[in-house]
Image 1 (cartoon, rainbow, N blue to C red):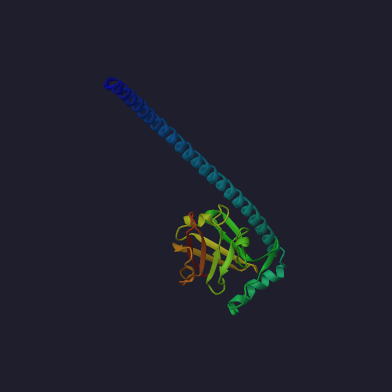
Image 2: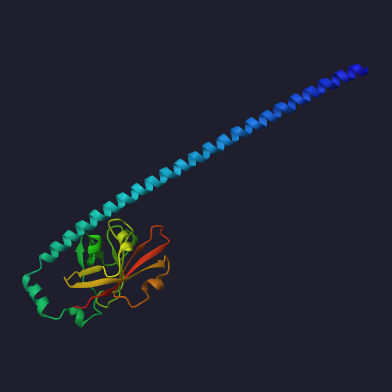
Length: 238
């Protein structure tokens, strides 16, 4: 009886050892499978993020090109309208004091171009840019061209906003003090400025954007979109 008990006890211990061994193997290989699955999942997520970033980049490039083409078309149209002004009117402009100097509070005149009311054109020689400036701003209008955010060239407090498109205001962050900026209003009056300062303003800090004794401010989003790059300019009096 004792020998039989010992025999069965040995069998039971062998069975338990076998079960424990199988359990350890299961845990070992199961852990490897789990790590493999996690690795594949992380790789898949990474590839999706890369693909999304590439798609966003392509979309932004296309939007920039589209906006650039539309702005260029508007500039050509505006220049043709200016060239069509009678020579007599041009002569009178040179001989007489412009109306805006007699009445700086007057509304800036506009010209309709491709369905948009524009107050003039902005030219930045250092960036090779010449763009129309739409009279009032909105998200939809900013996708077409830079817009007057507030103020007036006549009151020396105009602020112009532009999208961070390569073909619009993306490059203004690279401007340097002393660089030239030229604004021509819808009546053909030319205002010359030079860059004096470039600063970063909080994305929602409207008060700081409008604060200060600047004759002209150009601004756009930073690359991360959480702040604004503001180019401050002073007018060069003739």
